[in-house]
Image (cartoon, rainbow, N blue to C red):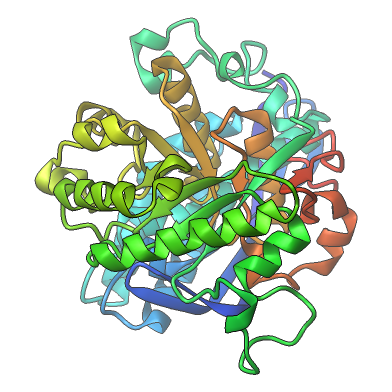
Amino acid sequence: MDTDIRLLELEPTFTEARLRTPLKFGTGVIKAVTCCTVRARVENGRGGVGEGWGQILLSDLWAWPSDLPHETRDAAMRQVVRHFCGELCRQATEPQHPLDLYLEAKPLLLRTAAEVSRQQRLAEPLPELAALVCGSPVDAALHDAFGNVNGLCAYEALGPEFLSDLSHHLGPEFRGRYLSDYLQPRYASKLPIFHLIGGLDKLTRSEVDDTDPQDGLPVSLEEWIERDGIYCFKVKLRGKEVDWDVERTKAVAEVVAAALAKQGRREFYLSLDTNEQNPNPESVLEYLDKLQAASPLAYEHLLYLEQPTERDLQAHCYDLREVARRKPVLADEGVTSVEKFHLARELGWSGLALKTCKGHSAALLYVALCEHYGMPYTVQDLTNPGLALIHEAGFAARTRPLMGFEYNARQYLPHEQPEVQRKHLQLFTVRQGCVRTDSLGPTGLGYGR
């Protein structure tokens, strides 16, 4: 097709982003992280040349939990990005749709990660999830460039006029079905946002002291609610300390209910994330039992749980059906391929927590799978700033996630990419718990560059 693109150039750049306040989740704390931006230059079948952009944080603490030093993991992930960009440019010589181009390059990405691990003599190889994070800005840049060079919104180029049906990637059950069948025809104009409550975050104004940032932005949960009217919350818990988790959830629910009551509002939603720290499903059920007894308020407003047990779904093949009967339980780190999606489904997981940092193309496939099987899904972030946030919000606005999308860069990286924020002011400004998508551009992924 003359809309297919040939890859001409991939250029990665790296900057350091320092968090306004430390972010505690799972077993670690993030204070600074590398932001990776990739520029793609492509040519379509009509000879038109255009550019696209992709961006993500190379969050090694999330993608590669390890005893290896942060500096070692960060250097390896940067090198994977560099090598993958170079190898993809050398090997992807035929014009293709970006979905096919990138998904067919996944083996190359994994080989690149293995080669970097050998070259740097790492004590443990770079895992698949970390490799996907490294590849994700390339994936986004390809879709953005494809839309820009063809004068199209990237989401409007996912039907039969532009690519083959889904059977190529998802099997014969999807013959005659296209990604466009599962997406919204236009961006939702308004989206609720999920506010993150990290393990170190303060809940009330009375907890704030002189050690906290003095930059005019809220610090405590109570202050954030007063300013932004947020009503969807993602609570980071410990997993291995059930009683602490119950008390933390109860305290959050009480602060949220009281703060919203002052605004004459009662609606709110909680999601819970232990980042795989629950040792087994039984500990999750114990938590739910104790939470229901200690705080009917919190239990009633609990919308879903995210990846409570280990990311290696094959390690113990835990059956999550009993948990799913109580509350929806969504797989995140545990699903890194279509095959692992089907395994999660067999094990009783309710649905998926989608992240653009695992790849735009793969996330589109997971949307089709979830919609096809009637499974809920959410759109989560990786503290996405600037262009990465626009990408995530646009993805959420074109799909049908459970209650909007996660947006916590406003808490931890509020001053990143000010020029981008000014251009998309309504997308970066929360009002009554929501943002507006009016500024999303008509081509590519909507950056409007």
